[in-house]
Amino acid sequence: MAASNYSLKVNRDLLDPNFESYRLSLDAIPTYNVELDAAVEEVKLKDAQYTLAHMRAFGMYNYLHIDPWYEDSVLFVDCKGRVLNLTVTLDTALGKPREVYRVNPESSQSEDRLCASLSLTSATWAALSDGSGRLCLLRTGKRGDSSHTKWEPLFTEDTGEPFTVLHSVSHVQAGVHTMEVLLLRIQKDPQETKGSGFSISLEWITVANTAGQGQEKKYEVRKRRVLRGKSVPHYAAVEPQGKGLMVASEKPFVFTHVDGKPVEQPEPEPMEMEKTDPIYFWQQTAEDITVCVRMPEGVTKEEVQFRLTADSVSIGVRGFPPLLEGQLYAAVDPEASAWIIKNDKSLEVTLQKRNEGPMWPELVMGDRRGEHVMSDEQAALIHERLTHLTSEDLNGNPDRDKPSCNSQELEECDGFPEDSFSLTHFDEESLKPTQVVNLGSHQYLFTVDVDPSEMPCLCLRHDVDALVWQPRPDQPSNMWEHIATFNALGYVQASKRDKKFATCAPNFSYASLCECLRRAFIYRQPSPVETVLFNRKQGRQVGQVAKQQVASLDSDRPILGFRASNERLYVLTSNNLFVLKVNNN
Image (cartoon, rainbow, N blue to C red; front, side, top):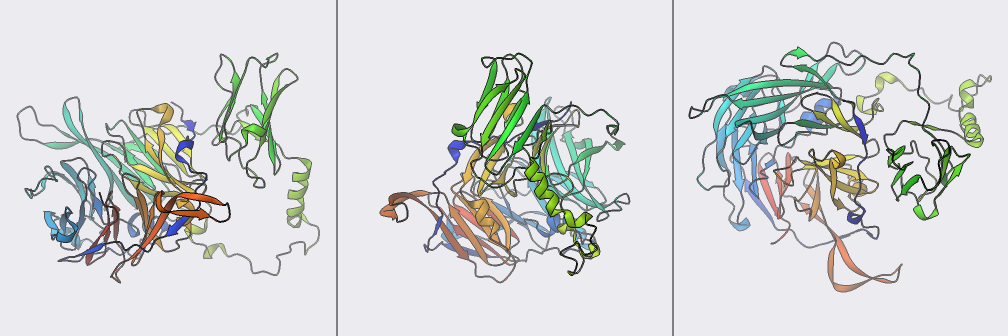
């Protein structure tokens, strides 16, 4: 099964072209402080953990976890190895976090230890890593009950190498209770000689109850799969029924082993393979784009099927699949665009760019079947810019007096990624990618659990906005659905140089960012104003205003965890858990 290129379909009804800006509000945010009995220990990276991948995976780990099944319930692990839970019902009467489980104290002795990590698998199960290589699957009972039930380990395994738990799900397969757990490791790779010397490993483990009817539960590993890549994934999650996996990463992942046996990798295509002719040719100026699509000879205008919106195009012949279809690289003006049939065998389309000036690197996102043709003027301009590289003049380089770049001084983060940033869906049976989205122009912002019965949502930057996407693995034609928009948040967050975490409320009433120390920023959705406001520049009345608020915490300790519910924002430092009352029901 070959992977198909997929374009994210933006819901224009969720965009606000008239959004102006966030207005700073001085309204106080009620903040409550819970002092912790024992500190939350931030596990520092060792000297051997020097790469950008180690920093992304472990140095920026979110130590606080919010329970998507029970509102306003958060969990974390302290330096004593205690898994602590705080459930908030009344802000003015916050209790102390209660212990629900304790990690084996021997795990803290390991030199390569990572931070303990937790994933809430279902309403009654959780997956826990102690940071030293031990995986525990815990039956928690209904965590929302006030019975203060202690968690019970029903499966433990020492894997030998430290890891963090990225995601886990619970489901019933053929009448058998099954859990899928996704683990992340960064391992020394002797074959990685050009890069950092490390590779990224994702291990997908299936654990099932092997006990018979009426017998005591006994859980064992049913299947193991290993994927490898060269960058830490921004997003990785298993489908609710364990039928697939989604990964968003800057460099691709491939399955390498199943149950310890190597997966046969497809052989690379030979270089001498004949290149197929382009289906279309396109040329551009600063103002417009001209596309020439090859059509069956003798086609009439009645047989042409042409559909154009501001951000997508579909061109084809009636009764056949579209020849060219997908999301355009940038917006066009459909009213100012047109098409004609030329020589009875090609369709010439003129697209008017909505934003004049920037040149497009591609016409349709992810489509490689066309060929970009430069005009003589564009070729001459590029030739002029590159003249110094082939000049006969020994001093043809205008930057000759500047010190040369020393490649040994470059960090890993300075390099331009070799592979495009992509979002990939893998099929569990074939272990092959089925859908691939090119995310090269979309910055990854954060992950949020909106509906615990669905996969986690991912938030991406689109132009200046932040768009929230809900994976729908059971809908191949619309596998990622645009469900919410935070206006201008993509632009706003880029200006926060000290930003550490970002999140949003599950009902999308607000988004929030926090810095490494002290400050949190809250960006609310536009709401009606109580007084009459006028926009002086446009001379019109303003009906809605989006508020921005800033909270400054009474702590000089680094922020280690950051989560949001519909009503509250939770901020964890080593000694305190702060509860910010953002919304009132």
